[in-house]
Length: 104
Image: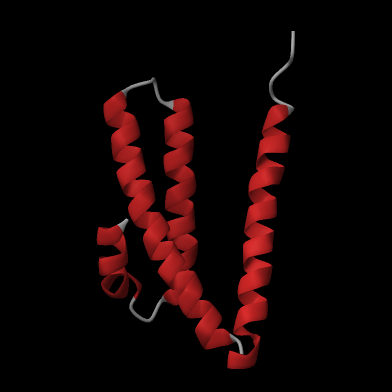
C-alpha cells in the first residue's frame, strides 16, 4: 500500500474521478478473483498486492476529490458521511452475503 500511495500522484494526474472509479473496479475485481479462483497462496498474494495498491491510490483520489469539490468548511461533514456510508456498505455486504449460505 505504501508503494501505491507513493505512485498515486503519477497514476492519478488530473483524472481524479477516473482514478477513483478505476481503482475501485480493480479492488472489486481482485476480491472477485480471490473468491472464484482455485485456492492458492500465489493467487491470493498477487490479488492482495494489486488490490492493496489500488486501495491506496483510491484513498488518495477520494480524499483529493473531497478537498477539491466541497468547501473547506464542509470537509469534516463530507468525510464523516463518506465514512458512515462505506462502513454501512461493508456491514450490508456481510448481511447480503449471509443469504447465499444455507444453515443445515
